[in-house]
Amino acid sequence: MTSHKILDFYKYYKENAQNPVDLKTYRRVIKNFFKEVQSRIIWNNYEFVLPFRLGIISIKRKKQKLKVKDGKIRGLPIDWDKTIKFYMEKNPGKTYNEVKHSLKEIDNLKIFYHENNHTDGYVCKILYDKTIANYKGQNHRIFVPARGFNLELNKALKSPKKPTYYDYVEF
Image 1 (cartoon, rainbow, N blue to C red):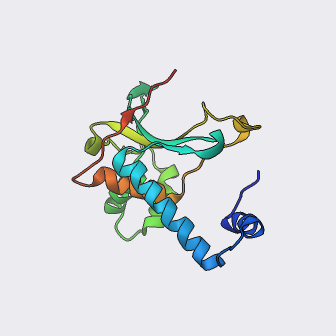
Image 2 (image 1 turned 90 degrees about the vertical axis):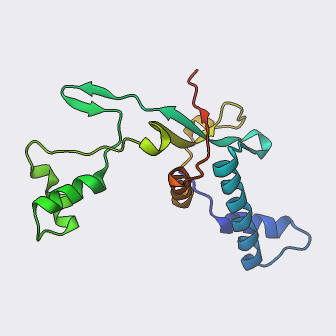
Image 3 (image 1 turned 30 degrees about the vertical axis):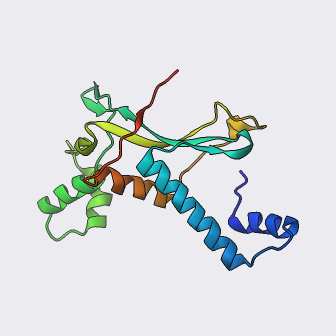
């Protein structure tokens, strides 16, 4: 899988621009641009339409559907941090990592789940919509948002002035 880095784009820019700026300035401009785009996507429910019909990046929400199958809860993400801290209280003297690695050995493991009460039971996700995309190999491409993008979305959803997002509609 090919992954393009900022240096690849800078080389192309430098070869094709009439008055190219230095790499440090280029990085700062790109970083500020994408921070602004990210902020608008998160706080203004902005759908970022990529140029040249490459697709759309947006945030959609979906109501969590709780399912119980074979006595196990499905559909809710596991809150590993809360689960590990619960077992740390039961095993004082063990470190976080020791408890984390010993969970497999516990019979009748009590698992805690993220209930997303702060979003009224909705899960919000950064999506790459390629239904309008028109390029070769689009079915072989995946979009993985940067960790900082997910962290900012998480902060926004837990803030008192949380943004609202469109519901995700499956076709």
